Amino acid sequence: MTETLMDRVLAATGGGRPAPEQPTTEPVVPPVAEATPARVDAVQAYLDKHGDKFAASLPKHVPYEAFQAAVAALLPKVAGCTPASLRMALLTCARFGLVPDGYEAAIQVQGTKAVFIPTYKGYVRLMYRSGLVASVHCGLVHENDEWEVRPSAPAPDDFTLKTRPDLSDEERGKAVFAYAFVRLKDGSRSQVVFVNRTKAAQLRDEWSYGYKLAEQNGRKDSYWHRDFDHMMLKSGLKALFPWVPTSAELAALVEADDAGERGDVQIVHAPDPERAALVAEAERAHRAAEGSQEAPGRLPVKRSKQGRAYRGKKQRGGPKGGMR
Image 1 (tube, rainbow, N blue to C red):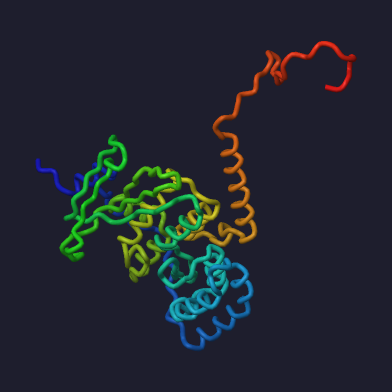
Image 2 (cartoon, helix red, strand yellow; image 1 turned 90 degrees about the vertical axis):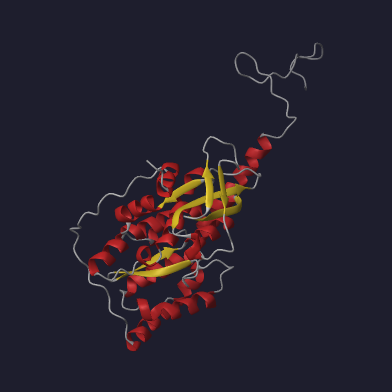
């Protein structure tokens, strides 16, 4: 029997054949209608009242004007959501220092709720911001690319990829799996992780409340519907986190993203700006302390059988109990 490309991908990435879709029994939540100009103005006025909270939540390197402009541009699509859910989604986005312009983050409509959605580029931004990695590498492998996975080989021979930049997306064929790895500050490289289309679809079907709602409503407008490859790539980055050092902010982003996928409240997972700074400072101090303990040339401390530090023999002579 001839081995197909998909068979090779599934064998290399640990995926199986997709199970048949099961009918859902969850209640249908009607989607919100496109907001009228009057509704958009009313929601804009509501958000303006909370402008100081958005400005205070944003880190200093993200200008409030850029955040405000992105919100104004997306309002016609999300103004039909409940105002409270929209405010919470935008506050969550602001606390992670991301702008909801569709590049690093977006606001998605789930029924009558607005939900914060970080993109894979948002994950990459926070990975660099953590200061724990030197470079982030992720991408999609297409049907006509040349690649090889050898898990037992040392890096970088465990994963090799050759692409043809002169080929169009159509000529490269369908994206069959995503890969992700990072290079650390010490020059080492993390494990390479893979998520194929089957695995990504399994994650979508099991966890994505927004996808299920879009299916039930017949709109098929969730991010899983509109850009499956993008979501497969983001799933690859998230699968990488158990194998690399992550900051408190990155861990919080994963929790908030997962909460949004489940349809849960996200704001409780967003980092407080002051607390995040304190945690980062404590982690830097801890790493510095560990480094100082591993300094070369430090002599071991001799200890007695009772565990006391050995300070050498006492000098004979002199008054008993005198200065030492």
